Image (cartoon, rainbow, N blue to C red; front, side, top):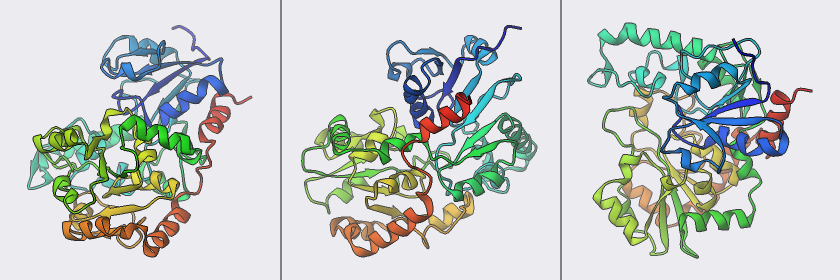
Length: 385
């Protein structure tokens, strides 16, 4: 019943669980580019401490959020806002997305054995030998219908390359326009200076002169799988003493006794202690990942990437992928622990083949990120005049 506030912008990151990704990057440029606009974050109380002092915020479980949803003009999120949110005429939803898609997403996972969790990461469907059981089929279809309804609220969606625009378009075939300006969170990578790199290494505690390897695996939907498929302790035995790992993984992967011992020794750094991954990118000399979209962001730094793909064909069967990563990787590929140790210990990732693969990958995927994405989006959508 009250009028929409033309200057109010709502930000949310991963269902209100953090302060990072593209929404954070847009928020941090807002004061400089559009100082008349005021922001409020939907964020859990335990993560609100990450916000700059004085930033307005409400809990994702509070009733106050409905007053914010009712009166704001602009909505910024890297996932969907809750289903019950009603979009009023004049409100504008900016879907920032949260990475370049390798794995199937949206409607493209309808035939996947992990379709339920691909649509709603909170719900854990019943399973029988890795497949959603028949009794869940009706529920799964309803979830896809609801996904389309939520996605139909988008007015604009962000893309960092032509490939992403194509894949997202058939994964989420709804009524919105593409802004092919790049990802706001990647502005920090494109514009990074040596001082920024030094600050990131100091923030994380990377020793002076050390070679830092960022290990950032993707999430597996299988119940109980923490996605940590590499024995970091065993791998470190093959590497020089000045090599450290920055581990950015699911929180359960860094809570084991062995991992805590490695962190106490200084050979492993908990990359999850910072609210977003950008400092981890800047601090790392090498990226080690599997099928995570971090490979696309990290390529902007033009530093080596190593792919560990021990379960690639299983992953293809259970989740699906838009292209054959083994045929077009961003760097060298290891399929087993022995080969991985060889690549890292011998620094093969610094060789000509690694550079050739990285160049081809960058030419395909690093096309729209020019370092001004956040400003361009704010001016195009929130300052149309």
